[in-house]
View 1: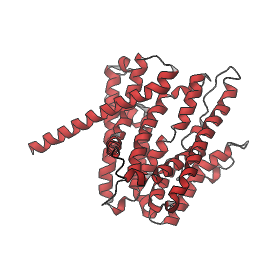
View 2 (view 1 turned 90 degrees about the horizontal axis):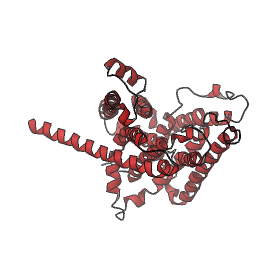
View 3 (view 1 turned 120 degrees about the vertical axis):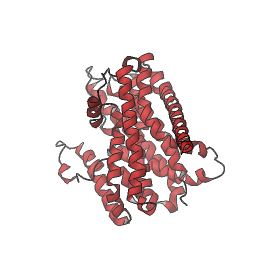
Length: 359
């Protein structure tokens, strides 16, 4: 019997909320250098762990699927859920943009199945769905990854190639005059989200610091805090000279806050390991609230899929200001998205009961 990892439920819920915060503070891309921009940069740095942790949780749970079920069952269980969610929510948002665009802050469209297919295949309906397209690709190559994942040394080699190609080389290039200096050494097939996917599996499977988790906890916390501070300060340092100090606003440079770059990698991995070290605490009887986290965690995918609709709608009716965008709006959007997910789950179960009763 598989023991439920409660720290993953906690991280899943926190990451889901973090995604909402990130999408509520996109004023950073306006790059005006005012107080709201500075606060948003800090929040973007603090919550940038969201997508990396999502990928790590997926890798931790799925790369070793062969020990639980066949590849056919894996595709049936995983591809079906993600693909159905992606298609159904994309179609839902597309229909809304055809019939009530002004009320929800959506682009106005005339219904066309051909247009929907074209927009869907190019991720132009809801651009934050890039995550679902990415996870679909990772699912497709998971059977290949699973073939060598049982070999610890081979997995470590693959992770090293991923980290160097995805995070280290771009970071090193940042500080040389020729920004392509090391690019020829990057492995093209081991770059991107696959890095987090494999790291997540490695951490939970081979437990490199299992015996000293308690002693490492303060160090992991310090590394996480230092990473956030570094990300925020370097992002501000990079952008302020060509915005506030020059009086001419240029495009936002999010290099240090990019989820694939080295600072976010260090932050996300240290945070993941920190929460993993707290698992004995989460497993204890003193924390019955874990049932709540487990339930919320099961709704996180639907929350992710719907939250942008509420952000767009609220933008129509509520004026932007620092307190609303940075403090109130993330919680409002998160709660509304959760309520939507709860209702959707209820309707799914009701339909299943009706179908069972007919049979």
